[in-house]
Amino acid sequence: MAQISPNKVVTITYDLSVTDENQEKVLVESAEAEAPMVFLFGQSGLPEEFESQLSGKSAGDAFNFSLTPEQAYGDYDQQAVVDIPKNVFEIDGKIDEEMLQEGNFLPMADNQGNHMQGKIVEIGADTVKMDFNHPLAGMVMHFDGKVAAVRDATQEELAHGHVHGEGGHHH
Image (cartoon, rainbow, N blue to C red; front, side, top):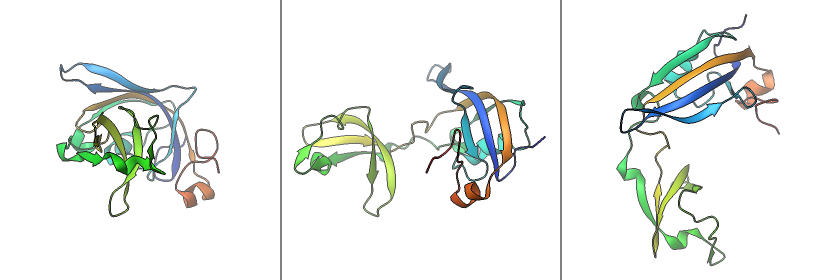
């Protein structure tokens, strides 16, 4: 039976909980059998410790582990919350009010051209406050799940660096 190792396509189901300020676990995400998480092990972009916890497991194996902020998306960085002039969001001189809503995530680029996702946290008269922290930054994450399948990646998947077909990327 195939074991999880680099260049394997891994399918898992899981519940992801975080610890809130009252030290209680709160469910924030589930990947169920109908819509499992499928990724290319070793090239997933997931936290290294997440992959390391799954390494060596086979289809049918259960897992239950926690990741600290240091092992995952880092501590929450207050400096990653910035005010951006509202006119930056103008397209042809107009602001798309549908797009500019509190809670929305927008693709942005810094002055070096690096792409990042930002969450709109507040809209002022002349500025938009955006948070560029990962949504799970500063949180202890608890994973409880099961390995559904492990298979060899195809040459095409390895060349592209992501999964194709069911649960993966479609060109």
